[in-house]
Amino acid sequence: MQHPKATSIQLDVTASLQKWRAFLAIGELGSLTRAALFLNSNQSLLSRQLNALERECGTRLFVRTGRGVELSDVGQRIFPQVRALLADAEQLENEIREQARDASGRVTLGTLPSIGHHLVGQLFTEVRARYPGVSLKVLEGSIGQVEEWLADARVDIGILYRYGGTLPEHEQCLATVDSYLIGPAGDRLTAHEEVSFRTLHELPFILPSAPNGLRTALDSMARQEHITLAPVIEADSLPLQTSLVARERLYTVLPLHAVWTEVAKGEVQAARIVDPPFQRTVALVFAKTKGPGKAVSAIAGLIGEIVDRMARDGMWRTGR
Image (cartoon, rainbow, N blue to C red; front, side):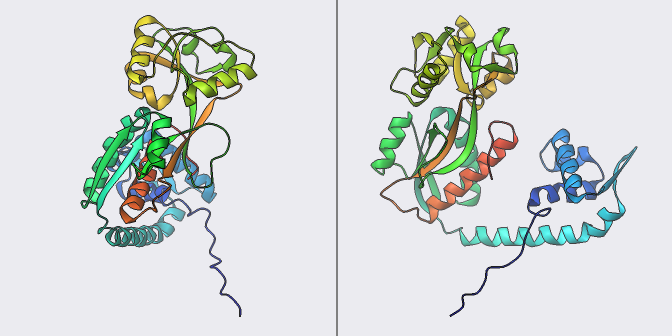
């Protein structure tokens, strides 16, 4: 008996509908500025997306004018098809969401403070709008605590860091995160965009105390690179680490998203660690003794969407 073959449809230029949504908005509004406001984006990002789309298409889709942009001949010909494609995609998305509307119950999320600080607010807003029958419970703790909660099924979903090149089969990679040397405002070392890992040798650090995933990975790499890490104080609290770096002119090692607000305010500085890079993975893990039900799967999907948005803001990188 022959099995039916999978569809032979192949997608390349049209694989990302977000770019074509930008194309549609720019074509309708005739301005990158107005399109950026409509899409809640920024003009420079939209311009890069447009340039990338035109490179993929191998032709100009717009003609730049003194008043803004106009569709090129090619752009005018494909515009109705793009509009129809996105309308079909929107209808499909609405139907999918309607099917999931009956997701209900409590979903418990275990996460690390540095991730939860940025994620949970957006997640709550999305859940309330799209899954009103679902209630959230959030627990914050260390990697070890989140792993215990997962093993005991106290949480349905865990979001934590993993160090090393591969993840266990049952864990999903959400993002890859670079580590940064965090220093006080005006600091010479962290004024650079990048610093070598060897720069960390004997700096006055505030670091988490062992056992801790970050500390273990840092100490291991320091041994490999034959340097000495010299914490003058140990503290597991992220706010305490950040405040002492700023006030006492110490250093620490954190992902950029953990100090996103402080860097934006100029309270601390951040330089990406390279040569070798010191990276970690943000992983999503389901409780081992529970199969993900409809509500849990729905929340996991929302988390993936939010992580992708945060990647576009520059907090980390995703492979999706």
